Image (tube, rainbow, N blue to C red; front, side):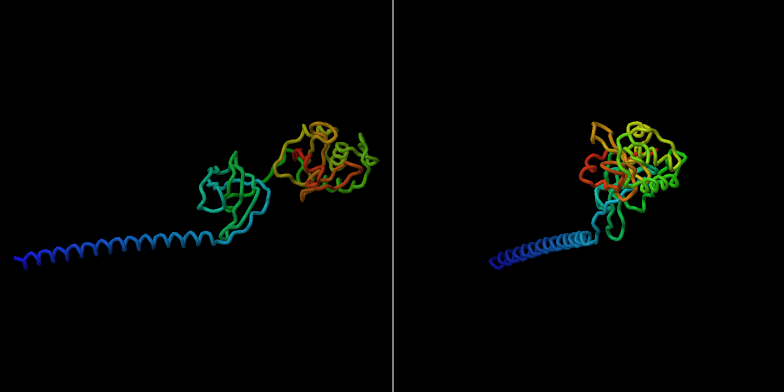
Length: 252
């Protein structure tokens, strides 16, 4: 009887021992699997972070979406979509950078800002509403630059001396286009542009009077030619005086 009881207890102990071993193996197996998954996720995450990317570079230009396009929070498909750019809709580009060998643009479309692959947008051509084109613009810039050094004269409209709007009127007349006389009327007969081209006008406010009070001709590279101060000259839009007074770019 004692042998029988001992045998039963021994068998039970063996069964319990085997069950514990199986359970531990299952736990170890699950733990190993989870560890493998965690390692894989870590590696993938590291791979993503190790993709070479360039710093964002400032650009300007208006583009159109070639297709219905996801606009993302940052440059990369792993970032969430902030909006969808509709096919044919326009977007203003402000920055670009390269991630994983692909170029991304930071754009503003409507009220939303985000990043899109450059291959999904195309440059939008700017159509001016006047009969003049790049030929007129080129002449305007050329004439304006040829007048550098002529003295500033309030109310002046001739090469003997110009004020700002007199300078504009004279330059455009020499280039073949008649425009109005004053800064305010020149502002009124032009339309705002977001991507200025050489030959467009650049307006300033709150100089010698409140509101629109000065005008020059944009010549590219963030510079403009105007009659201001003591003479007609080329000035940077980053100038400590004119920069803060900048109001808008406009075109006839």
